[in-house]
Image 1 (cartoon, one colour):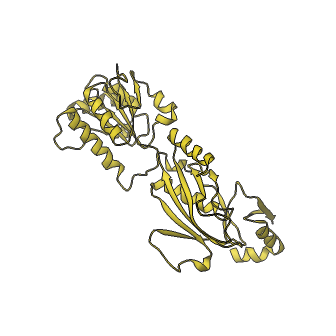
Image 2 (cartoon, rainbow, N blue to C red):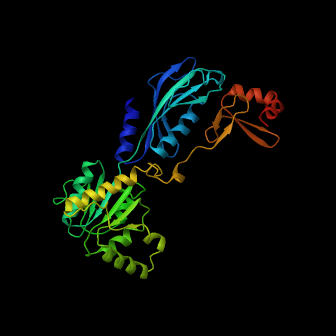
Image 3 (tube, rainbow, N blue to C red):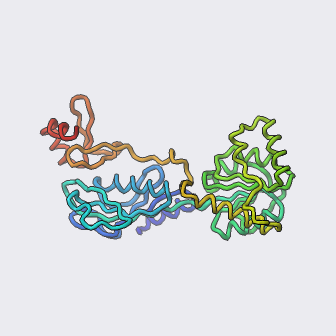
Length: 332
């Protein structure tokens, strides 16, 4: 990986932003890409690097966004239509490469997703246990609690000695997302205030460490203050899996086990952004060669009978303009 691309990957990782790394593992001439070529695709559909020209790039971007949505790597083979299906392989996605230049390109696309984010609202021993276990599992850990200090929570990435959810919203690295899991464990000290702040965010999990009786009293209080029922319904209580946990460490283990269970559900998107935030580039069909062309970056555009048509190359555009009705009839 070149220095610029390596720096870009490092920059995105530090900012806790998702991206996909596409690597050409095999290239068959006359494709312009070479084995080992790499590119980074971010959640907005932007691409940095080179893994092929205008024929291959839209497909790579589209498949990269799919990896960010489900968290699974993809192996994509772009080849001429006549070569498709000749040697089918499990796990290989074949896409027709209909550009005149031809060639075959095999690309491995792997997602790089932000670490899950554990937010612990507490200053009690259970918070220490949660921070330690969460860090051991590779989570980014934030602790918020009255009088909480970095000295008490050395495993935490960030410690706030007060409740201020604006920190979570305004700082991208610690931002609240669907991969954020909030645990309120103040043991009655400031449960209501903590839950009120937590429920204003769109997180995957908001749990309250409390008895059922205490939790229901807190929920009723929030209901009377005007908290919408759909938000109150998100509160998980008692927190954690029920396997008889007693000590702070055991309770912390039960909570992390529950979070893992939620994260591993197939129906849960692995991307820490709403699916609507995935910005697949708008595309149009090149009526000459059949390739999908990204509209925003298309260099070859033609107007005919009040309609706009997009092409992957000057050759396709020229062919269309010579005999537009031929291609319009074929594409109908």
